[in-house]
Image (tube, rainbow, N blue to C red; front, side, top):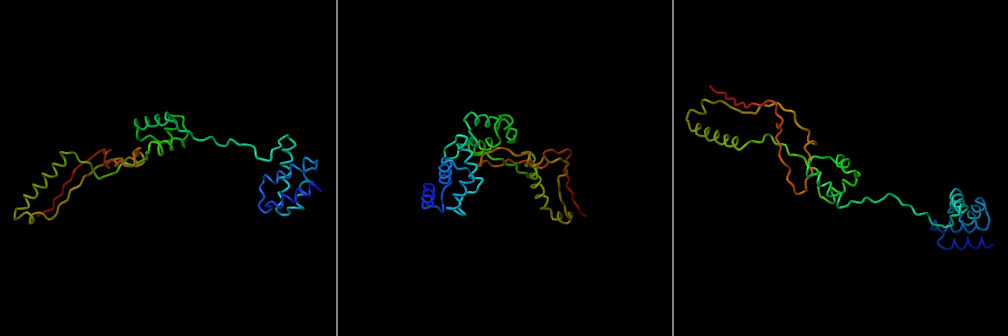
Length: 219
């Protein structure tokens, strides 16, 4: 009778949303009275019906109570240890970045013996860095080459004052001819702060052969 009464009391106490710990309390109480898993489950089904925990849950907790674990709460689990980023780790990663801004996350993790996740946290959250690519432009001219362009333009402008200039030239064009093996864009990526302006790099920075051709077509 006491068992029936306890089951009814638990039903009144929010039976529709009864927490697992309350079910375990009932299982423990009936177990301590000397009933086995089958009997405990049958008694609970009569009161809770479809809301009753399944038979495997009952047997699981009966086994735990038999082993000497009498708490109705789950055992504490350590879980995954938190990722700790120390000042020493941040300093080590920063030093590697200063030595080679093209170093990869995997290389940093290998050198420092730090997990990849911790390396990414250090780079983004502590050092405020991100990978940026070098911006490709057609060609990077030296100061002398830029001045030579100005001189050529001035000379052509003077020649244009000749009354017969446009009569002699039908058309003209100029181009740089070169052979090169372009570096992959990913290979030029560097660790920089968000405010950093990407550096420029000529598409022909690894030129094997180059030449400058100026073509005039005239009469």
